[in-house]
Length: 443
Image (cartoon, rainbow, N blue to C red):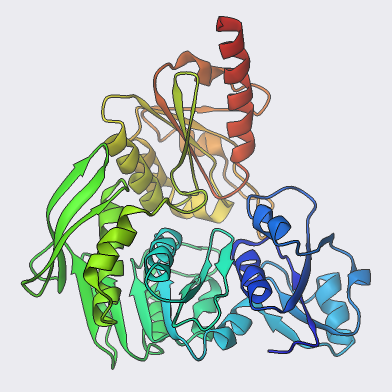
C-alpha cells in the first residue's frame, strides 16, 4: 500500500469495486474513480465518503495513479489502455483484493448464490465482537484499523476467487451459473476445488450439496445443515412471521438456541455457517446470539417497504435457486397474503441454459410477471426472449412494459416481489409511482 498514490477505480460503482474503494478510503488512502453517469444503488456510500466519481474519460488518467480495473471492462477500455501505455501500476479487482487480505484472519464466502447475504451476516456478527474489515458484494465495505478479521465475498465468476488465499472459507453451494463462462457443473466444481486447495485453516460447506461433498483437500471440511451427517446441525427449527429460531449442535455437543430476524430456510443455513466460523475462532457464543438478533440485512436482499395496502420487496435474485429462496422467505413472513413475482431475466445465456428451472422456481408465486431480458455489458442480445420463458410458466407470465405497470394495480393487501440483477428497480419505481397516485385519489 502506498500513501503517495491515488487509487483510481475504473468502474467504481461496481458492487465489489465500490466496497473495495470504501475500504481503502477508511484506511486513509486517497481514492477516486470513474463510471457511467446513471444512478446505481451502490453509489450512495461513495457519495457519503466524498470519494470523487468521474464519467469515463481517458483524460482522467494521469501520473500518480494506481489503477484498479473492474472485471466488467477489458484492457481495450480507454482508461485502462491509457494507464498501461503510461506505465502506471494496473491491478484487476480480484488481484488487488488478494493482496489486501494478507495479514488478517481472512474468511472468504463463496457459492453460486448466498454469498452476499452470508458475507453481510458474518461481517455484522464479527464486527460486534472484534475489529473487522469487510467487503460485501452489495457495495458495502469497511476498513477497520487494527482489524483481527477480514471478511470478503469470493466471486467464482471467471475463477476470480483464485486470486485470494483465505484462512477460512464458507461455501454455500456449487450450482451451475455463468453459462457464458462455465461449460457445465463439473467445470464449476473444478473452480471450487481449486479454491478449496488455497484455504489454509478450514472450510465450512453446506452438507446437502452433493458437489460440496465431493471436495477433497488438505484442510478440514466441516459440513453444516439439518441432517445427522452434518458436523454443525440446526435442529428443532421454528419459522414464524417474526423470524427463525433453532438449536445448534456441533457433533452432538449443544451450542445453544439461536434466533435470527430473517426469513427463509436459506437464512437458517447462512446463520449456521456464521456460528460455525465463530466457534472455531473461539468467539463467545453468547455474543454471537446477541449480534445475530440485530442484523438488518444487506442491500437488495429482501428489502421491504409498505405503500398503500401493498408490501413491496426488492431482491437481487437472478438464478432459479435464489428465486425459490426469496419466494420461500416471502411465504414465511406473509403466510396469509398473495405473493406476486415480477422477474427481470438477467443475461440471454442464463435464460437459455436455465429456462425450465426458472419456470419451476417462478411458479412458486401466486402470479408471475416478466420484464424484457436485461442486456448486460457482457451480452447485448441473444436468441431468446422473455416470451419464450413466459410460455413455460403456469402462474401467468405476462410481459410488463415500463410505460404500463397497471396490471399490478389489480392486487390489494398483497406482496409484490421485484427480482433481478439488472435494472428491475426502474419497474419497481414506476409501479410505486402509480400506486402513490392511486392512494392520493382514494384519500
